Image (cartoon, rainbow, N blue to C red; front, side):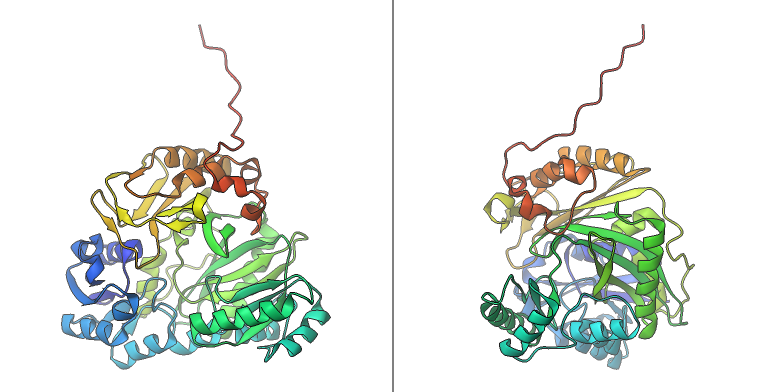
Length: 466
């Protein structure tokens, strides 16, 4: 096992990794930018190193400084968390050539699945269903239009090296296609340094279903069931739950088997997530793979009673998987809400500032993963995630009730947050019934405003015993 792990990240995920390391009796190193000098991950790590100025390119994306921090502190492993360099194949390679273990897949595995067009080809080869689309990157609008006419409008143009909803444009018809194609290429180049794009048939009302997988260096790969991440804004997930209300045991097994086949094809090592679109008729299609731990991993942990981050570290140290479950160990239902410093009524405008009051919810089955505290200054340089509120119940109904009360008792003052918006979603009849898809918020724009939405009917009154 490792002696010291450097966490190449910040915020709540850095604290999450620190906690896992402490349970494994591993010393930790926090790296931080000048803007994060007072962040909690610097306080709870055994060592901390400032790696640069506030902008990410000068700190959390600066590979030489992170490697230097690992070397001067004697770290023998680096955990990348999520975001920043977590899916950077070059970083994974450099870490390993520096005689430091990368807690994650190899650079080659990241490359194989990080290129969406190449990943689609692999899925097709393995007979994993994919959304009808171009066989690979499309060179120009003229070639793209021919593909679009063949698969039928509407189509979505996606960055081949993309993720996080960037470099994606929808063309409803032939007239819209040239401009959408051009914009997607421009956005792809700006965001990822590559303007390669590919085309897919645009599904009208799909659900976003993803499978958590874990592989070890001994050739074993398992999946830990699905998460439903359908409540999104511009392809950014806002609410996640497990298991999905739309997936039965047969479908769970079929999607899980497809995910494991993909991971086995590249001998995947570590935690990863294989994402699918689930159409209204029950058909599912491979979308992409994220070769890292996900923001929403706690809902899987709550439903399987399994520590994914500790398992990541054990697997990276060469230990075999603790057990193999493949979807057979679900317990109850879990829901996660991402609490951001944003104003939904103003197009989710970021709201940096100083938190003046902080009171987290509690009670049975309530978990809060966060790095904030009263007096903490939310910097304007990074993602606006403040906390992840996760609840677990014996049933979906209990989890929903638990989430509603947890949101109602979650107090953060000093910055605008998404808590009221999340509370309204939890009370919307369609969400309560599990009737959501990736277009849910587009159809219900009133949820973004402060007006009171339809509420959960009050339980019928019961006679008071004499």
